[in-house]
Each structure stands twice: as structure tokens, then as C-alpha cells.
Length: 365
Ligand code: F6R
Image 1: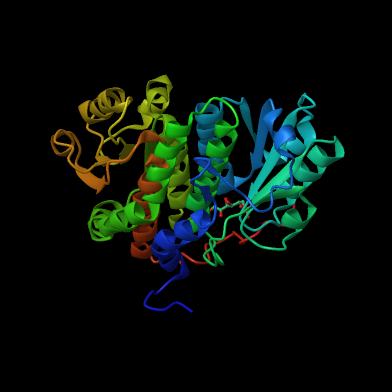
Image 2 (image 1 turned 60 degrees about the vertical axis):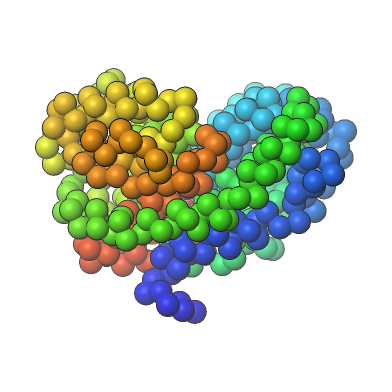
């Protein structure tokens, strides 16, 4: 049922306050300043001994895994490896006997992710699923896991599943962190921030009209660059993927500082660069990358924080998002990029819910 929306993709983008609420429900343990999960099925003692985590996934879920890596390493101080499932299943990387694997998948049916899960289990590693579809093959075969509770995602391009995957891994990072170095007050602080996510997403969605207007300016372009750093580097990759898959425009995402090592050669007067440049430790650095693009006459669309006074003079177009802690930024900065891809695709007459050559779940290798 599409309700007031013309497409499932737009409906699902606008469902994100609710899907995040559902993802958080029942999973916050205020007494312990930690998280709790019904279905991990692992002994606390065993979890305490995990010394390495492998996150394996494909596509958008792989981008969510990259955010997960930063979250788990920052809050739990456990080394994390992110592996494309298609590589991991054949690569045979060395794993310690205390390595735990998480397969991240919306559908729970992706062939490569399923094979990666089976390979990890065959080697005797505890192997979990972070999955949306209840009772899917991966959910059934995993030793345990976390359901996203995002509700059915019908649009082929993944949107609400991405933000729920990131939120699930935030909860996981909190939980593993509280078994290790993270103090009670630090846990409380994280919880307080996370509780605000649905509301922050609601506020972020107010950018929709501004994004639609910006799309009219750029929808005829053939190439886009997406740039961001730290927590917003995976967001840049995800923004580029969204645009590619539904509008068929060539787009590439990079960590902003990599620009100067090659991609800057692509900058010209027609190629837009989308800079994800919210406030934070990297702001001045990303701003100077942005200025390098402007100096070469490249058009710049910036995703920046409300209250940023410098950005309007530096960029051609700005989409404002709420100013949040750096580790929460992927949730708010990915939303305008979902909307940008959406509006550009619509202006180009594309079928956003059923893009060419793509299937909702990739059950072949
Ligand atoms: C992108 C997209 C794909 C999926 C990928 C993995 O919008 O939908 O890149 O993310 O095929 O799918 P799941 O998460 O179902 O394993």
C-alpha cells in the first residue's frame, strides 16, 4: 500500500523515523547503560572474549558494514574487518579462534552473503546475522543475530534498511563496548543520543523540497562525485550507489582526501561534487577539499549542518541537516543523498522502484 506516495522508494525514505524507532524498541537497557538483544544466542563470557569481528555483506549492506567498523572500533575497541561477501567466501583470510562473523543483509537471501556465512560457520566461528527479513535463509542458518524490524522494503534501492543496519550496529557497539572499556556514563550518553534518532530523522526529512529543487539543476549531468570523511566516507559511497542504480548516472564515492590522488582530474564545469561536510573534526579538511574543487570551477552540492555560516559562500547549493555527534551523522547525512538520487531519477523518467538490470534480492552468485 503506497498511501500518499507515488513510489515505494519515497515511502520507505519517509518511513525512517518509524523504522528506527522499531529498531531501537526494547533494545536499550537503561539500568546497565547498555543494549540488549533477544536473539544473539551467545554466552556473555564468549562475547567478552571476542578479539576480532568480521562484517561481511554486499552492496548497500556493505556500506553499512563500513560504518559499523568505525562504530565498533571506536566504542568497543575490537578490531573489525569488513569483507565483501563475494570475496570473503573464496579468499580464506586467517581468523583467530575468537573471531566472530556478522553477515549483514536486508533480504537474508543474497547468495554471496549466504555462502560467506556458511564458510564462516564451517570453520567453526560464531556467525551472526543482522537481517531484516524474518525467517529468511540467512536468518535461519545463522547462530543468532539482530533483526532490523524495518518492515518490508519493496523498492529495489535499499534505504530504510541501511539506516536500520547502522543503528543496529550502534547498539552492538554500545553492548560490546560496555563489556569492555566504555564507562556507565559514556553508555548513558550514547543511549541519550540514540533515543533522539527518530526525531532527528524526522527533522532531516524536511530537506525534501530543497533537495527536489537542487535536483532540477543537475539532473541532466553524466557524472557525479561524492566525497566525505570518517563516518561520512561510507555515506559518500552509498550516495553514489543510490544515484547509479536508480538514475543510471555514473557516480563515484571517495574519502574526500583521496581526491588529490586521481579523481580530481575528473572535475570540470559540469561535473557536480557532492560534499558531505557536517561539523566535526574533519570539517576544515573537507572544506579545503571543497575549495580545491571550486578553484577548478567544479559545481559543489554540500550536505552541511544547520547553523553552518561558512558553507553557503563556499558551495553552489547546500542541504542542511541537524547538527549531531559524529557517530550519528551517517543516519542524518545519508537521507538527503537518498532523496537527491530519488528526485534526479524521477526527473530523468526512471522507474525508481524497479531499476533496470537489478533485482531486490540477488540469489545468484
Ligand atoms: C542497493 C541494494 C543492493 C543490496 C545488496 C545486498 O540499493 O539494494 O546493493 O544492498 O544486493 O542485499 P541484501 O542486503 O539483501 O543482502
